[in-house]
Length: 335
Image (cartoon, rainbow, N blue to C red; front, top):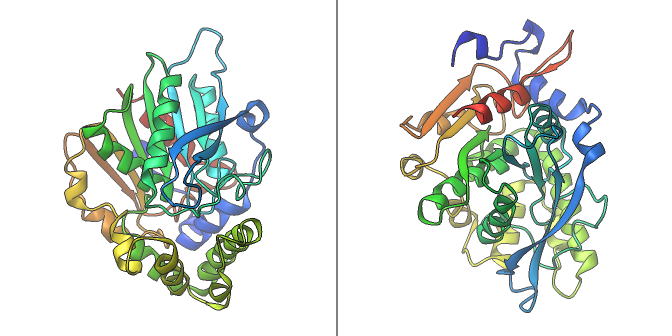
């Protein structure tokens, strides 16, 4: 990446903690939210066993292109863990893409969403786990059809970046219609390492712990016959909660086996055959950069690691500027 494309904020903001916190505190108004159309999707069979006769339901939000002459293509945006289609980074990227002439679809993963039209935890009785890849792939294939004969791009941040990379890998064996590019922002590639890093920082640990426990309490309240997470509410670390949930709600024996089934490693990315870009920050305090540094660039894979930006931050102030949305547009424009 050239210097002109690099993220270089003012000196006080060149800190991973500052960048990560600012990303969650600054919430500008959104054009995409004002013009969005909610879409409730059938995402195929429910592999959790909680609803054997039913299908997974996922809620998304579609924005038609602003230009009357038609769209330059369709971009799917995937959020991070305990985020949603209405997270600040997702909304800002959606706004930038709409202004650039693209149609945008913001998909909520199971148990995620803004609670604007449905209770996000009530849509499906089964609990969300990132290993439930099939339902996301099913939904993405439906979304890709909206693109028609236009290019289809998948952009994901954090856990959404993990799904974006895995969708790119699945594309090799099961081509996704019109898929032309993958963009992964601060992607979660080594879940076990990230959980341990979060657990080592009391502020981040409590932030994610409270969000996760809110979700677990909601599932238990809505589906008491299916879920009882009461012992997990007393646990103080994410790893301990993960162990408890995985041993009761998954086929995996323990957390490490579970993590291995949705981790993305160097050997995996060597199989990519769709153009893919990873954007990351060296001072990301959620995603250890050493895991991304272990990846090798190839004809299909480009990697940009910036010295600062935190986790999904990349924010400057005076004047206020979010760098990631423009970077996303630049990558989507690349042909």
